[in-house]
Length: 320
Image (tube, rainbow, N blue to C red; front, side, top):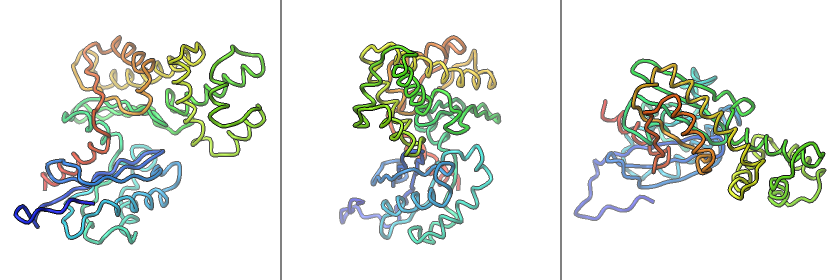
């Protein structure tokens, strides 16, 4: 809950903003004041319209916003960063706003104050105050987004079946390596033991049932965690998968760098997403990108991407 103001410090005119960071696996919403101080935080599941549909995504966002709404306080702006907004949902912003305002959790007072934007932009701004630069997002999916004055470039981000270097990519490679070992087509790997333990199974038949009886977009990305564990323990198969993922992520970033003519420039390259917890992936990405852009300034935000959404909401208020 929002802390109660002390009697002598009460300010009924204080204004607030709400930042929303939508994602394929989770949605984080925060309430902040105009100084950027986070007062309340809430989270829920996916708000990815491609994966679960617009209405379910809107429902999750609305319910989570409701959890952080203060009583009798003025909300001046709400910035909602949603996945795939720069792809197939680019022209659905008005529709999404209307759907949100239909929800009982969203008060009518928020009409005209909701800004629908990209989770990629929110992620970028969580790591820098600069307007030009690149964000490389490597989580359940993978995408690169860059800005240079009026020019804007997006690379990858075309859905879990084609997002090279993503957690889904790693999970899929992990599953393939396991079946190669089981068949005798590939090397022995710690991945088999780790995934069987993770799923609490003992046979290849159970593995098939576990993977294909659930939505692949949910279970397969989770294998990337086991792959990182195996890689850390020195498993060669896992290390090769992680290195390949790093090279794919760097390829996407380097493509954006070239299109924006950043090769000789110093610019912020914001790295966000759970995959950068892997030392192998992080070091591979940096090494490959440095070959193209030696002056790239790698930034791993100390704050969550939702802080970028807060910044963008505050900027909207300041530009009124």
